[in-house]
Image (cartoon, rainbow over all chains, first blue to last red):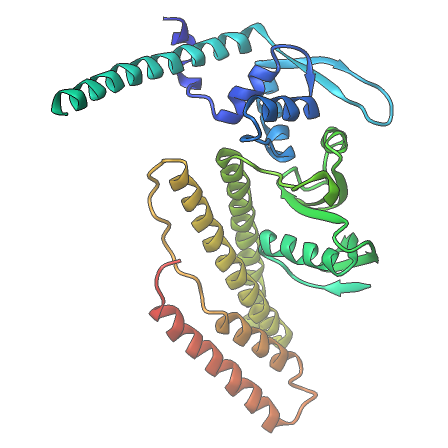
Amino acid sequence: MKSGRFTKDLPLTEAVFYILLALRHPNHGYGIIQEVEEMTEGRLVLGAGTLYGAIQTLEKKHWISVYSAEEGSRKKKEYLLTPEGREVFLAETERLQELLGNAGRINSDLIGTEEEEG
Amino acid sequence: MIRFRLYYDKDAEVEWLNRLVGEGYAMDRFFAGFYHFVPCEKGEWQYQVDIGHGFGGVSREFKEFMNEMDVEVVQSWGPWVYLRRKAQEGEFQLYTDVDSAIGQYKKIALLFKLAILLEMACMILEVYYATVGGQTIAWAIVCLIVAIVLGMFNALIRTRKIIYELQERKGEAPAAPNGRRVSALIPVGFLLNAVHLLAADHIPTAIRFVFLGISMAMILIGAVQTAASRNG
């Protein structure tokens, strides 16, 4: 099982999951917020404090790393998913697929029971 | 303009700062409870308070990150950080998911615990000075510290309740927080007592007794109220 190595890190919080997803390509803080907002159609808007804390934690865990840092008055830093971060993300995706697979089977059982009763 | 306030509750503090922005005053400096305001357009800014980035001010990295988000670090004071963003940028929230909000309130709870311990250590020292040295001023300081500790204790109870509610929202089943808030009459009573002790040599005995009577009555009524109240 792929997720074995990262079992203790899972499940990821929704914010961390989307931050990792937004960092599949180099992205800076504001870009992450915008991308997550677009992906979730405005449902999830990351606060600056939430994002700052998550970035600090993810950097410490070596799941993301600084890709580039702009110089100038607004020193934007771009971050990128590391190979380890990618593995964690895939492990979480696998876990979520298992959940959805089981939910789908139970759903079809429930629908079948309802039809028999009807 | 300058206003003096002592806030233990950062949510109430944010609400007050934003209310003053609504009246056309933006906070630009803070020092030991003194807030300095300058005129601004009504509703121009939204303020937030962040906590727990160290006692020596925020890092350059934090400032740069916040600047990138169009957030201005107005002032840091110990672990307290005052932030603001133009209201036209939309709603300004620092912690938008339950996990980071829980983390934030846990930091606040830890700060209150540390501050209470520090105050208690100071109180023991003052009790020693008061009993051994017989200094009236030391008793006044003891009363003052008791009032501060009780205020912080209430703030800690409130913070633990918020953490409990957030953990419940997250689907966890945490143990319900123990402890009940102390009636505000008790710390106010101790404050009055401190004033009475400090002014002892400068006011007539009759007024001293009135002061003492009121403060003792407040402490007693507060104790009864606290005993009768429910947890939290």
